[in-house]
Length: 274
Image (cartoon, rainbow, N blue to C red; front, side, top):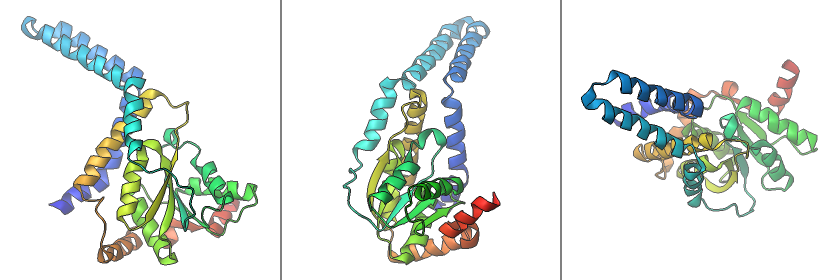
């Protein structure tokens, strides 16, 4: 039964939550929908239920307007960050940069280059083909070494990011990482990467100020659901060595090295092909 639940979450959860996020984060669309619902109920409901339905519609609208305001977005995001330890500034074996929806990614790829320039770690694993290219360009522009750069191109979920990082970096002797992602996502990412066996230094990349509060609100809400689902599936529990061996084998089967991962040389060659 647990395997079935895990399969369903793995296949449909990311797609479902991002679909809901995109719809709910359109404040104009949701407001018009709720106003339309209230108007229809006012005219279509019988006299006995009309008042009740109108009150329900207006309550939903008022609740939504609170959720998309700073009254909700600020404390809900701050709560997610409260339990994450600060970046100590210490060195690590590698920097792992997680992928993210564009509105939430901030300046994480420029931040990665800055950390390399400050000698925080010699290796870099970036989630995403285009994202890896961004880091590569940034390193070359500042005359920094690119040899330690790798990118993962087929990964979609936080758990897959952690698993693939372990499968690729573990055999290279990487134990301690600097983990880069945005404020709402960091708590779930930090707990997931810790459970897979890494010693993690979280480095939170702030969301750009231009991102509206309604988008911030639903990024936070999505993370609360993500935390609940990962906890339910036991993804925050430390993995025993035998399980980590299976993780590496599963990554090799699901994400072939020659198809889903790129070295610095392959990234360099991709520019000439593109």
